[in-house]
Length: 161
Image (cartoon, rainbow, N blue to C red; front, side, top):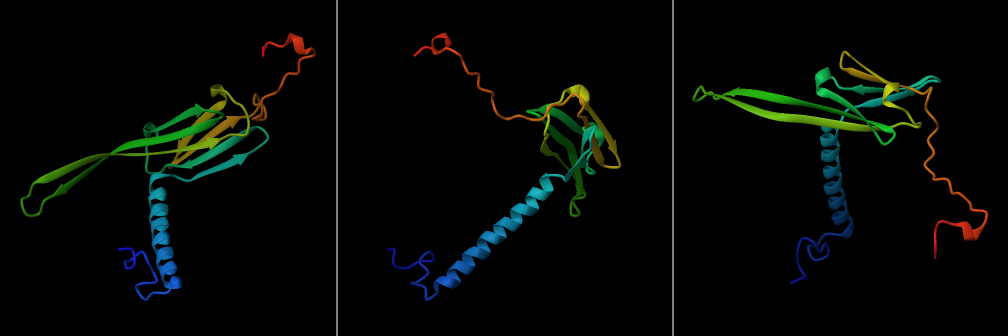
């Protein structure tokens, strides 16, 4: 039962190297297809930091400004774009038209290295490029650690054992 089969490389007169090469080709093909798919559902983002602000440039040429939404989320910016696609096709044989509707949606999260408020953000869309500027004037450096308060007397602690 287990002596012969495609998963046992030694019983099919194939060397282990041949089997590993074919497995590697299989995995690489899958990764290449995934990369193509990921490129289609995402968009390019570039960042630039100055003394006054932090700028985020998002390439959203396939979307109109009304299709784009920016949310402040966990010390970062969530950029979402969604639009409806309508495809019309004519059946050559019958002459009937067929219409298909679908939603195209993409999003990216950009983490910022400082705290900010909604009032510190300005966004502008020009020729398919969304530029988001976040003013650093009121921002503070990010501190992911929680400060620990040290009590002077162990008996004054709020925590009881």
